[in-house]
Length: 111
Image 1: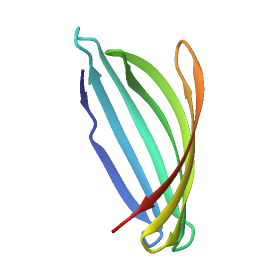
Image 2: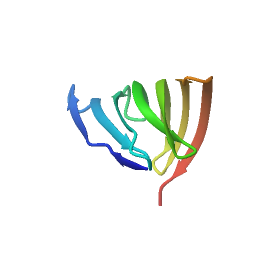
Image 3: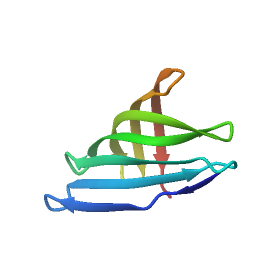
Image 4: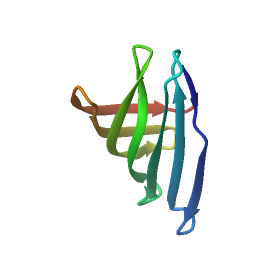
């Protein structure tokens, strides 16, 4: 499977709001091609608290084949200390054969 995914990103509101758009092009081993996109916004609410959200209508790879997938996602991050960040996210995917909701929780330590 081959995937090409160029994107563009810009910032407004003194760098507090980031907006990005990504084009997704994929081709599987038998030559099936699919295109899609991902849109995302990131907002620095405070210096330590951030939120993000977005929408994707792009192919996903499952068992070597391309599956059309629509996803709505969002989340938050909080810098507990300078090197420690707590993250939480949620995503809802719609696929031809099933829908699913994914929850994520993570902790990042930078050193």
